[in-house]
Length: 222
Image (cartoon, rainbow, N blue to C red; front, side, top):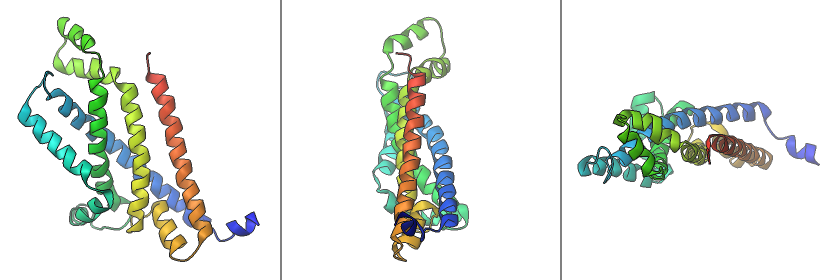
């Protein structure tokens, strides 16, 4: 019975979809991490009582983060279609999904970065200041290392969200497991393929969580 259930699964298409999902997730996680760290640092450093305090700059960055973080992802994909076509030359395929994935995830991660930085002991920062450390040295040698467990935990959560984002993007032609489950599974009434694609997504999420937990525990000094 189990063999009959799997007989309708198109394994070559499934493997290709897994590779596309991992590709989209990997690129967007890396870009979201870099952009999110930058935005999160700016949100933290320009807030009240911090090194680069500035209400105007903080308001600008907070507005950018809040706007893009608040737009539902499926709507964001549609809004970005002209930009995606201009940048990528197409609105279909794995590469075409990247702008929306990154723009959707980076602001979300930026808020997690800001929260992580706020949890750093002010005494450690003041001690570094008293020893003559520059602001940039404090950022690279104190703020980021001290908040690293929370930063890794945050990017783990963001990565899992990005996997679900790729599935949504797949419904409108971005490729990956979402596209496979919708086009080859649901539209062609292939329940076996839908189930296997769903299991593949769950396994990817599980692996991300395990790796994230391992790295978080590894960097936690407490």
